[in-house]
Image (cartoon, rainbow, N blue to C red):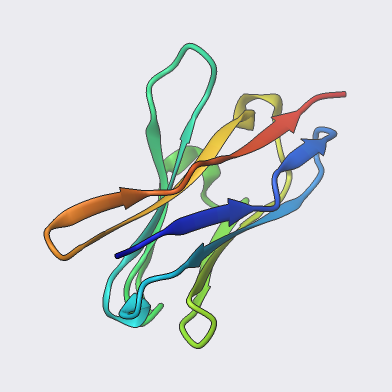
Length: 116
C-alpha cells in the first residue's frame, strides 16, 4: 500500500523560495514516476511537474519552467519540488501523486501561499 505525505508548505513573499517534500511509504518507490499537482482556490487541479523512476526525465508546466525543480531520492523514498521566484499565482495546495499497482495515489496536500 502506498501512502504519500507532503510537507514544506508555508507563507512566502513574492520572489521567495520553498522546498516541498513528499515521502512515499510504499516498498517500490524507485520503480514508478512521481508527480506534483496543485489546486488553487476555486480552480481545477493542474499538473505542475513529473519525474521518471530513475530521475533522468523531468517535465514541467510552462508557467513554472525555470522556477521550479523536481528531484527525487530513491534511497529515502522521497520526491522534492523546489519552488523559486514564487508569484502570487503560485498560491495553491500542492499534491504529490503516483500511479502504481493499477491505481493512482495522492497525498493530502500542503499549502503554499505567496503574499506580500
